Length: 254
Image (cartoon, rainbow, N blue to C red):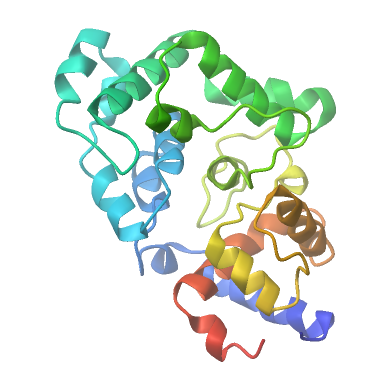
């Protein structure tokens, strides 16, 4: 464990070094695809498919025709044939696009997430409202489809909700890395998109003590990073992720 003042200096420098397009395109990352399109719906699809090997995620996202969101359900059924990704089979992916099409015809993601957030300035409220809306739009169910959108939670989730928190980082923060399309959600209320790389890196650096990969660890890490930057704690996310993904953490002096 390092002195926290020294660690803050290192992480501030690391965030400046990593939060840019050059670093983004140095290794596979779903944000690469989202950034090209700069669209809220495409970004959420990219984020929710972001589980597993980063290279495999990127290769799959490159196969998708995101314009299907604006097509008829008949066209979606035709164009999604033979598509599959890990837990999602052809029918799952078809229904995912149909669900997003229905949602887009009704409301923007910016309005849906922002209106839910603003009631209590709570990001969890926004994620939960989205999940409930998805459930109301399409009664299709399968393991792959349910995994994609995640399980609706009560009060406090058990899951780290990494993919949703990553999407919200992309949408709320605005710099050379993140897009800032949601301008009425404050960066101070974002939660850490905790994946296994970031989790292990944070333990190694002494940022968290909890050894269980769950939502409580998300809160612990988010609160610790608020000590470094109260108004933008999630600016450290990409740098911490890259430290773990690239194994740089081994030479970082943790």
